[in-house]
Length: 210
Image (cartoon, rainbow, N blue to C red; front, side, top):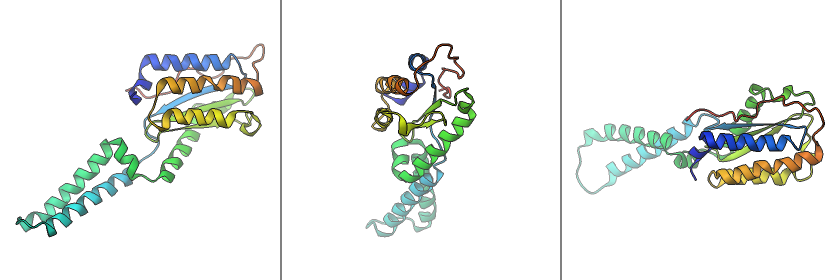
């Protein structure tokens, strides 16, 4: 299933329904943020361009058939542009060219920025939980407010692992929704719903329009 499915109105409604189901079980507030890409990977584009240019230069110098030498510079420049453009438009190639550490750092920073932008810390009990879905990076980052202690919640690591697995091998909307709904019992056991709990954060998925 393509990542485009995540951005369809029906998918957003299904995610909203999953969030509402979670919040019926727990006093925690869950926010889902969906992003196409979490940082700039221009360095990976330049790296691909340089690799294409180098390959073109080597071919120009060592191929056995004749060619116009005064076109070498132009050929190399065009190869660089082609490689950089290919990397910028072909996501698997860009992921291959970008270091894992860089992708993790970008997701980490973007998730925490979204936590602030979405005002997840503004709940009365400081029990906000942001589920940040990074499409290009193929991962999910969960950021919890101070009222939610992951170390004290049984099953938290397993729940986070399921969320990440639903994206890491290629985004699968049904798997993601199932993993998202599984947060309900986990959070509910540690932070059960209370009478009079107010819905303090939006349940709609925060995502760019496709």
